[in-house]
Image 1 (cartoon, rainbow, N blue to C red):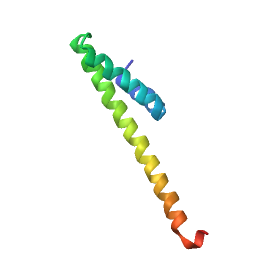
Image 2 (cartoon, rainbow, N blue to C red):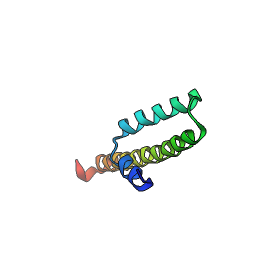
Image 3 (cartoon, rainbow, N blue to C red):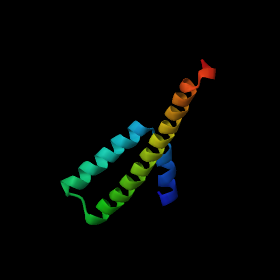
Length: 77
């Protein structure tokens, strides 16, 4: 799998799926039973998952702000 394919796969994950995968990566790294190179690869994927989760959260926050603004506008009532 190329780096670009990995990014595409991550971008298709839901927030919950990404968190679950990230949790699994953290557990494996913390156990310390995998070779250094594998740890680095997993760390890199973990960072990509974190970025993906942050993007999802930012979009959700923007959506919530729009909803809140709409509900505060007296003309919308």
